[in-house]
Length: 428
Image 1 (cartoon, rainbow, N blue to C red):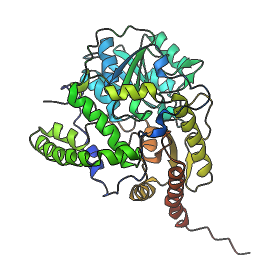
Image 2 (image 1 turned 60 degrees about the vertical axis):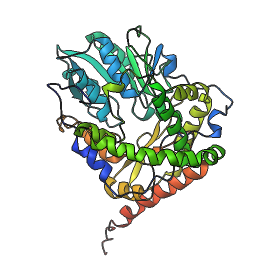
Image 3 (image 1 turned 135 degrees about the horizontal axis):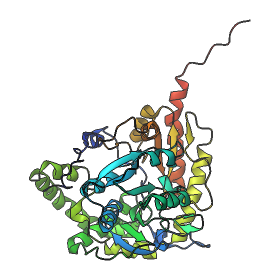
Image 4 (image 1 turned 180 degrees about the vertical axis):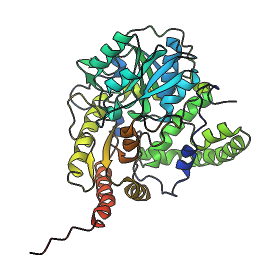
C-alpha cells in the first residue's frame, strides 16, 4: 500500500524527515506550539473579527490543508504531464499532492521578504503549465491582485494557499477570495486536532465525495483535542475527571501502535513514526471531525484575531535589540493576522539546538525541502529554510508563557555574540 501514487516525477521519501525526528534528544515543549482548548477559547472580545477564508466563497471542510490541495488539483482536472508551479520555499506536504496527481512540480523563486518573484515565475511557464500555488507565508499575504492578473493573462489556475493565513484581507477581499481555489489549515488557528478548508469564489465544489471518518476517527479527534489541552494544564476540571480513563487508553494504544507499525510496509511505518501528518490519499475524502467543526463554529474569532496580533506585537517589543537576529516582518499591517512570529537568525544552528533543549516550541518552515528540487533554483529559499525560526503567537498562550519564551530566545542568542572577538582599537 503506497502513501502516494507512483509517478514519473516521484522522489523517495526524504531521509532527512526521518532524521529530523531523531535529532536531540530534546525535552518536551514547555508551552503549546499550536492552539490548545481552554475555558477562554469561547470567550468573546469586543470588536469585529477580521474577514477569513470562510468568507471567500463556497466552503468544504476537509481533513487537512494538504488534502485540500489534492482535492483542488483533482477537481480542476490537473493530471499526468501537467505542470504545477510551486515556490522553492515550501514544505513537503505542498509537493506531495502534485506528485499524487502525476503532475510535475516546477519550482520558482521568492524574494527575501517572501514575495513571489514574478519575473522568475514567468520565465518558468511552459505550454504544460496548469496551476500556480501561492502561499501567504506566516500569515502575511502576497500581492494577490498582481498574481490574479498574472494567472488570468496566461490561463493558469490560481490556488491560494492560506495554510498560514486563515484570517485577513487583501485589497478589500478576504484571504482566499482571489484564487480559483483556496486551501487552509484549521488546526493552525483553532484549538482542534484536525481540520482543513477547501474554498472557491469562482467554482462550484461539486463531486468531491466527502465522507465522515467513522466513529473511531470522531472519538480520536475529540480525545486528542482534550489531551493536548491537558498536556499544557488547561481545562483543569476535565483533566482531573478523565485522568484515569486516559491512562488506560494510552496503555492499550501503545501496544496497538507497535503492532501496526511492525507489520506495515516501510513507507507506512515511516508515516506512523512521523505522526501521520503528511499527505495521505486514504484520508483525502475524509471530512473534518465533528468536534473540530463545532469548535471552529463556536470559538471566538474576535479573540483569535486580536490575541494573535497582540502577541505578535509583544514578541516584536520583547525581542527588540536582541543580538544576531531580526524579525522577518518588523511591522504588522492592519489586515494581517499572523500564524506565527518568524525571526531571522544570523547563526541558526547553535541557537536552534539551545532553544530545543530549553523546551521552546520552535520549528523552521521548509527545513526539509523537496529532494527533487535543484538547490540552485532559489538561494533565498535555502537561506530562509535554515535561518527563519517560527515561534508561536497564537491566542491560547498565557502572558507568563510569552514572557518565558522571550527570555529563552534572548538567552539562546546572547552566547553567539559574546563569543565573537571584538576588534582591537589601534594604538595611536
